[in-house]
Image 1 (spheres, rainbow, N blue to C red):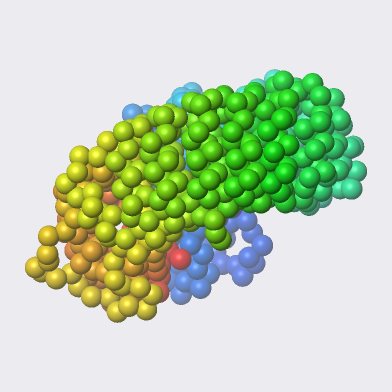
Image 2: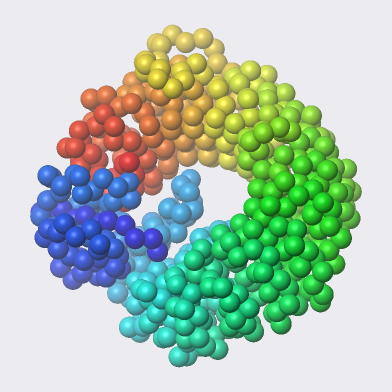
Length: 604
């Protein structure tokens, strides 16, 4: 669990016992103190008052709690049914996964009943099964609970961070009895190489299935490190370890190689020599997932990859931040060996329209669920031609996620995608920074489109007239008819991201008042500099305001009345996550907002 600052205003903690405060402090790995200038503490609980200490709680991750917000955050005084009802509400909210998971875990703190904690842990695993296991972590506090004989909280997660400088005892405890927390089979190791090797030794004979290493955790003897991995290891993740081809070579000749199912080597400077070692390695029929992004691979390397003996078994392939270009992409994406592929990330390779067309011309690819071709910074980009090819591709019928961010599909490309008869299963569409304008919205107005995603990302497209430095204005009382009002392609949308889209007050008003967005729950309108208090006041008067479970309004130039509007907002008691900037707000206003919203607000 990431560390954070937790601040309690003790004078407002009615009905919260000292033992409950201590329990929360233990869970947060916090130090209870009256006042301290020692910022080395992983987190702090400041008693008596927060006024006069605003400079100490500047971080957007800080949480300031009074009695009411404390009880809601940790489920204090809740019945079992109330605790589960609250957990269910978080799970079904429109907030990002990295808020939902810790929020449900927090509720376990509110009870001493280990059976109830276990039930909540089981619910969390089941209800959030769609999350990547990488997001379902076990905290140090949960591990401390397990060591104390209360393992329920730790049984919820999938992986555990081990930093030998901080929690080597946890590794020792887990290694002493492999039956402890048997579902915990993934460990991330961070720290000096000697400590990492010691952690692996202490974990002993646990049935570890996946091990991840971060930058700086690997010494010069790569072979020794890989030899130290348990024989049960089925997945390895070396992220930004920068070991060059020798890491690839060590893996390829390792006794583990024939049984490795997941190999992630993002940003390791492998180059042609490293990839060649993996391609030429024999005996791996188990490989299901490969990430060789950011390894300085060239077009010829992708042509070679198309001939790898283990390619037909892949379900997931990530190649981001290389130099495939259209030639390399065409060579790989034409391969019949990709028939089982379910997830493909070919972003930031400048594959252009020819690369997309090569994908669409491969009849073997019929199971692709997630396709990412985003992050291109220079030509050739994917244009409307590539978008039309995807819209007409029979293989697009299985796509649930399409990310074409940072390309140049323009209005025609977006209209083609949303009008496609083959993309009906699409749930997430990301076309940020694609030269899309309000013209696309106008072209789609009133049309019963076949494609109606639940999440739409339009960030970085100029949909309004208020760019950086624009003076905020109030929405006009009489506004012309807007194409947003009958944007049927947004009728199923629950999450809409309009970050940095040059929204002026009138365009913003048209969006948030649109009857077409009747299912919207999560709205990101950050970095729209033409919006301020007047736009917020208009939003709060709309039916949408009562439905919002998440609102991102960062970098709005606030005026004097913004805090009062937010303190009395229709969603003040029900929203799960509110993100705002503090610029333009007084210290007293920020403190009041933190106390009103508690862990649900991010002020940065």
